[in-house]
Length: 119
Length: 145
Image 1 (spheres, chains in turn cyan, red):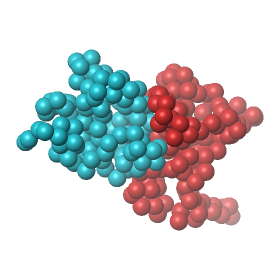
Image 2 (cartoon, one colour; image 1 turned 180 degrees about the horizontal axis):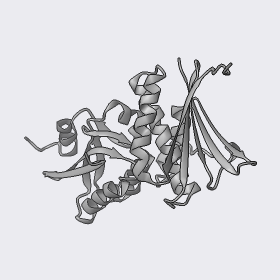
Image 3 (cartoon, one colour; image 1 turned 30 degrees about the horizontal axis):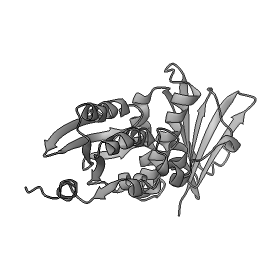
């Protein structure tokens, strides 16, 4: 299995990013490029569905931090869902759960991102 | 008569390349479980080791991939010790400046979080220099509760 693969889906106004594997100093450039590509395309509301993310190091957190101001300046946001226990521990330990909206699952996150949307 | 060994230890030497991070963190996680820690604690140990080895590769060796990083794992009754040794640029414990998470959140920026994760997830983080060998060391200690 590759260390990291990333799938992207567009659901309404929300770009759903699904990283599978590990985000560390070795794979972070791929993750960063995926995020930067969305922002370049003007897709400023991004949901990171972390159900298949086994691990994220500070390199990956830095990639998210590097874009949070940009997306919010464009009235977008970066949301998180489906965090595994150890991934949640990393975000929570650093206080990031105060900075990002964290949801139990993707449907909850999509509902919060686009309250009027159905399905 | 052979000297009595009061703890088990072994070493792994890897090239200073990030492609081996996954191998090292997998080893650290399994070592923590073998030492008697639960899965959640073992995951934290593996993250701390990732951060420490990444620091060596990217900062001590400035990203140069033709050096060595040595990991020594020591199992004692009280703790798992992971010593990370290298010949690159070292830092001392008194130079370790941890960012304040509250300030970090107010002023987001890249970088600076690795040391914070290491210090939060381990019981002790020490930086040492061996003047005789010229090598530097980062020592991570997790007590077995």
